[in-house]
Length: 312
Ligand SMILES: [Zn+2]
Image (cartoon, rainbow, N blue to C red; front, top):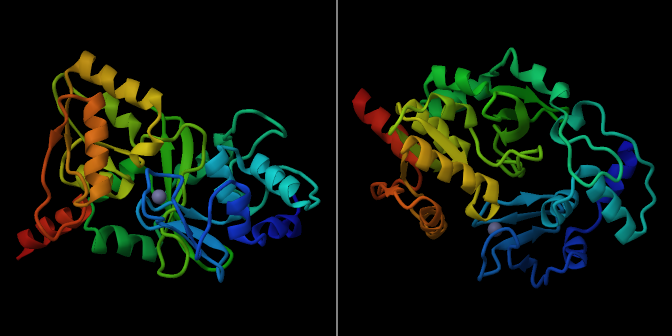
């Protein structure tokens, strides 16, 4: 697809796109379709032409909204947008540096495909830029061995914006998806959704190292997972509970029955955190609840605090 044509789709007014998708927009807000929302948490910025949910963190532009709401891959979402808005586009597989953040797909294919051969090499020799090292080792005080295990790498896009690139692997160690996290401060959303069809649990390879009866910590999102690993625990991360697939729940139940895995969780100190815990507890009846101390909203903050106290 040509860049100019893609831009036409990105420039479609985000609120109009939302309305075409059936969302009821009022005063630049609507109920968030990505979590169980009762307070119109999703807001639209007319200036940046993006949406963002302050509860579950969902964010993006017009194409992202179609992709995530209709569960379409990138090209199918572009086609849908073009059709719905009478924009004429010429199609081709995504290419160039910008394509890094988009999953390639076959035209008209039913299932989104992710071609790991295009991206696997980025993670073979991970490179951490200065902003990445600052974030990981100074701000978050993470263990270098954990970052190597997770194969985090960094890159700078054509606009000079620094990103941390997070690979998702299956249990056999095959790359199945990629997530980008913003390193610099700015208007952009901090996290982009993981791209790739199957990446809903993060750090699956750690499951192969689990011993009988060993503890497994479950975190919400990969940042907390890195902190948990750095604290010496085996950990996986899951996306928001609404995005947890049936297959993931089945996998966790299997661990429970086969390895007698003891599950632990430090839910975020907020309502969605507690809700996620309760939802997971329905699948994992032995999931143990740990309370974060007051003033720590998530495990990353708690971890940084414990590291600083040891230094003092
Ligand atoms: Zn939301």
